[in-house]
Amino acid sequence: MSIIDQIIAGDVRATARLLRDIDDQVPSIYPLLKELYPHTGKAYVIGLTGSPGVGKSTLVDQLATRFRQEGLTVGILAVDPTSPFSGGAILGDRIRMQRHFLDPGVFIRSLATRGHFGGLTRSTNDMINVMDAMGKDIILVETVGVGQDEVEVANSAHTTLLVTIPGMGDEVQAIKAGIMEIGSIFVVNKADREGSRKTVRELRNLIELGLRRKEDTTWEPLIVQTEALKGVGIEDLYQAIMKHRAYLFDNENGQLDSILMKRARSQLIEILRDEALKAILGRMEAQGMSLEDLSRRIRNKESDPYTIVHEVLERELK
Amino acid sequence: MSEERKLRILIAKPGLDGHDRGARVIARAFRDAGFEVVYTGCHQTPEQIVHTALQEDVDIIGLSILSGAHTYSFPRVMELLKENKAEDITVIGGGIFPLEDIPKLKAVGIKEIFEPGAKLEEIINWVRTSVKPRQALQA
Image (tube, rainbow over all chains, first blue to last red):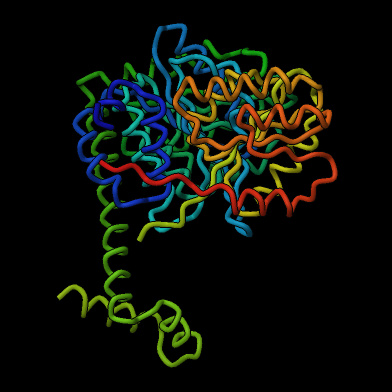
């Protein structure tokens, strides 16, 4: 049986190995990804984003349980940060998901942000495709919750959950500053804490303000309060996700098409940027131009980064 | 250009003891050595450990145990790896073991046992020299 057949049949080992190769950006992934691509497009992708410590892993665990009750299979991609000092990482999101370890209907993969050329967005999108091709019905993507990359990942999901907790005044400020637009559903987790209702109220105000500026005003983001650890509010959250899904699949509004187009476009740009960079760097290296030397010239003020880049591009793109 | 392949390690605590200080210290040391460490917390069954190792495609499993249940859980992990055709994953152990048990554990395929007093650098060096990240898939 070929690797492709094994993955499509849902084989854990083969899938895990391809995911590892995607993470490491080895060139042999491309023929495999090409072959798998026609088998993608069936999974429903849910992104969870929000600051560290708001309870994303626990929510993922609860949602996985809820989807399993419907008989749906679940893939989970959980991202944790890479240490900028050593390049290593501790991937601990699984601690909150222990009860799914033996369930063959749940596939969990932890990944580190790494900060590589391809960017997290790209490898995460590739991994979503692989989990989709292996037949997972629902794919939950849990981001680190800081930085633009993660927001982009969440943005390519069908439904994006923006998770916050009460009492983080600054949190609402941060939301205000731009990621407000991406949330299909806002989750106020740890809702037993003081200030939960206030947070909901503030979110509602921000949503209303945001709606006036948004192009798509047909979906009013929902707000759900949860206590993920105790399972409180999970049913409400599940229903909210289903409501958003029904909205997307309502043919009248064209939202599904718009989300799929957005994802296709962002994947295209990611890969193009990545491959172009790799190709150019490869050719520069072959010509004996090292990044080190060029950086040295800039650092010594013998040239500037703008001139160098334009010189390189003129030569390479002719 | 492909990146340098990173070593992926699962640090797992089989059995009932809840003392994971050692596991956390070693997880951190491995992170600082540049490895990617999957940490799953306490009270793991051998089945859970092996499932995790397969899903996460790790090169090495580090089992931390203080309870004395290693005579069951270590061989069981090896057995399950074999059943899943994953004997290529290196397994090492850390914790407290009666000296006479160590040869028995090595006999079932545990590559190395680190006892209290083992230096972190010693463990990291052992991993660096003994375990290489696995090869990429070939289409």
